[in-house]
Length: 153
Figure 1: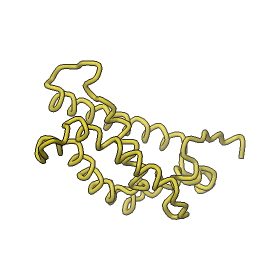
Figure 2 (figure 1 turned 30 degrees about the vertical axis):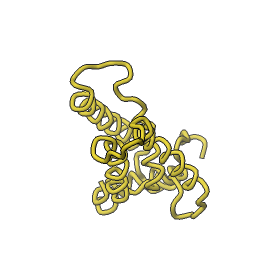
Figure 3 (figure 1 turned 90 degrees about the horizontal axis):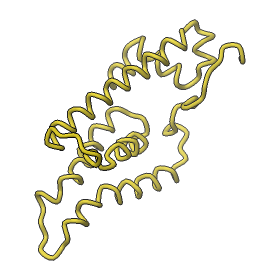
Figure 4 (figure 1 turned 180 degrees about the vertical axis):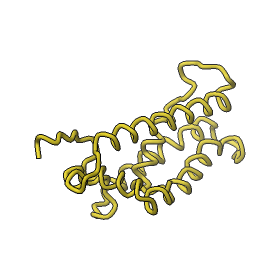
């Protein structure tokens, strides 16, 4: 994803659409097409990830609590990585290690339940620290969550 977003024309156009759709539209980029394709591809990747997680971790059986809030960990991971794909690789390893730590590191007298809530506690701490940073380069895309209507420019 890093190479796609930084080295290809399509990736640069996609980043431009996310940062400033007005400017991208003025440059002749089809904003609607890029937004719809990004949403469809992102949803497909999320669906595949959820399927793999359910099939491997939840024992191939769908139950209500099979995901157990890991989607929120993924959202926190994206915010923690400041929307940079390379940082997300290492951060995913960290969060994954926190998720399975109770299976590998056992301290006598330390309840397993505390191990299991550790990823969520770290997530809250990371989100607080990330929200306190106010570096212009590390902010989310400027038009994140905003609708773009060509007629409004």
